[in-house]
Image 1 (cartoon, rainbow, N blue to C red):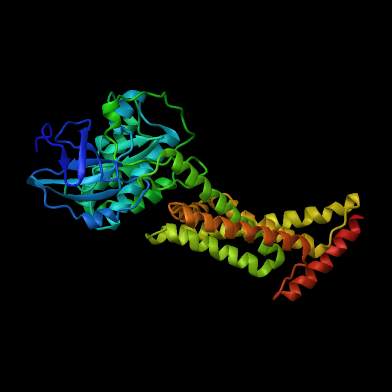
Image 2 (image 1 turned 180 degrees about the vertical axis):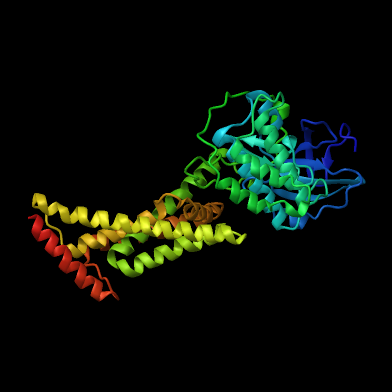
Length: 434
């Protein structure tokens, strides 16, 4: 297709060519004036499955909005992506040097998650490489999805080649960390059937420790390279593995930051409610909190079986950690008797239960349930009235539960025997400290 004489493609007004020229695509505007990126498929490519491509959802994969044939040249097929400035991975490595440490881990993990989202829809990328990955705020976004037919197993090998290129750089000045070598070998196995799935790649990369983050020197990309991006990306998750919001919904970086802020605030309110309920009714409160954390883990974990078992193991360890926190807080409050500050023993135990509920969300390795919870609220934040309703409801619930927890007598029902034993043992301990 000749781009120099074209003004529109489908319902989109062409603005100017992207970095790799008219045949590569255009920055364009839709009917509402929003920026999009239009990419053209090779001439021999079959029609893209736009419906399935639209279902690919990942913060690390370019959102496909539309697709079709150019009205004046029916064999020129195209896909429409969200447009947000960014720079290709190839340009990023050339300008700032090879990736290392936590930065390489975030890159490898993000690309694996993007491929997992593509493969879940029965699709393949087909041309993954440093030119098909855009870096925004240090996080990767895989672009050009659906332009070339491919095989998922080939995507896995391309993932390994792209990670290697990012780690070594164009001049081979970098090196692949030894901890990653076995996974790269598995991803490039001669028999495609022996290669891990993209979801397995993501799980295995997430379990690796690449070392601390290493600061990379900023490098200002020229305007043409920034045009290469198709969607926004979240800031890469650091060691704490904080939730990163899905990009590509047409919002500005400021709007995305506000939505993420609301998501985190509402998540905090949920934790406050869980803690308050656990103070008022320790037994059911802690059971419900533990089940909620387990359910949120299940939303984010998919097969293989070992990943599910690993997630269950982390939940159990979090429960053990929460039990230790409950005991520590309870005995600390009882210990105030040594300075003549007396609390009702059952109140002390109830506050310990509330602390345990908080610990279930903040324990080491408990980031995945928090991420899932924040993701749910981030999706709600796309619609202003929903986030407003959620904020009011959770805010009132948190206030009411905290007020009740501070004023009402806790009930350990249905564990009345445990209540009597706690009351007796803690009362004896308190008396001995006076």
